[in-house]
Image (cartoon, rainbow, N blue to C red; front, side):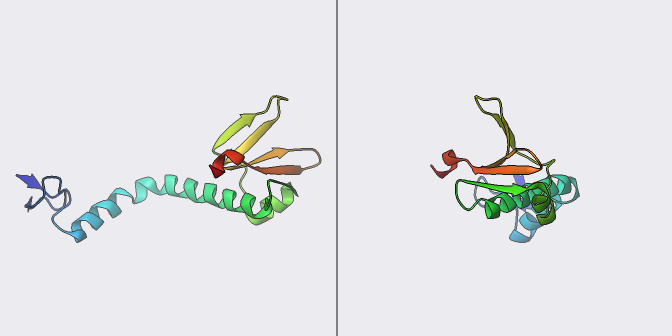
Length: 118
């Protein structure tokens, strides 16, 4: 006999059924994704915000902007998804498919990863 993961009542029906009702399934998942996952949710929200800002600035394959423009829009430089080093030794900081490279005088080169369009 299988039991509901939320209320522990016996379950009848499909062999892979885990909940007795939609209400129990929703309660279980809401509890699972609550407080302990706030950190992850907040990080993902900032990463999405950073990506959206880079996408707005970089309408083509490349664009330049200032550090103050990025900060004014809410960009947080401490949240990236990867680093990529070019053959020349330049280090691009990527937020998913958009990257940025610090040039001089607080100017940043924004690029879109061409591999992401495949």
